[in-house]
Image (cartoon, one colour):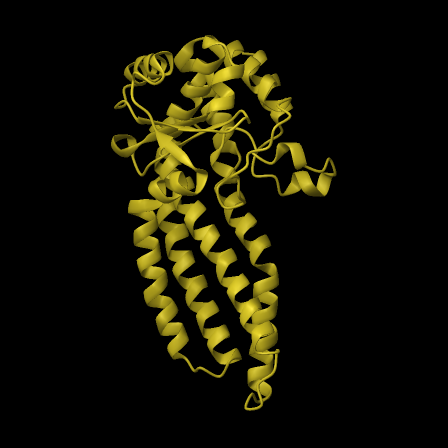
Length: 297
């Protein structure tokens, strides 16, 4: 997949995921409403809510992602070298210079967000600034700018918000069930069926959320690696950076499942099980494979 086909694919995937989210949330509203004998008005409420959430995720996903990550904006005087790297690479990539944020965290990671190149943000942790040298940091920033140019940031930001919403709804239903004692004297056999369906939806919501993230496709990381290496003309810089990130002993304090796919490496990598089943649901491709491809360029 080249850059132009990636941009086109990301734009239609964004529309498709937003539409599927509206359908999914409306279905959940109908099931939960029937389960608690509230009628079909829950479905109508869910339809309206999902519409607002989809539009809101399009325009405000970057702000929500930055807020949940604990990121703070910085001025050029706060980190002159980082600013120069971002500015120079943005000029070389033909995109506007994004705003720069820093997360005060010992872990080494970075991500980009924003609905388009004109509203983009590049965010790094304080840990990555301490551990990477200039060429390695250039590789990481070039990777993130590739996400910006490919419109990955729009798709990934929207997915982060919608995924969080799906998991939250499942949690709300389970809490409502326990609060009510799981019983309703007026519930008929049909209501019991919907109640069971609601429990199944709620239990599976984390898996569904992960599958939505995987639908974004892990191939975007390989493409961003290749595009970033092309931008810097030095694949070894990004390969060395990824190698350091792979051996970083720290796990991000504010990392969460909804935003994990945004980062250049999995923010939970220190907690990852090595079993094949865990890797099957990893939002990132194996970092060793990414390093191998970069070193072969």
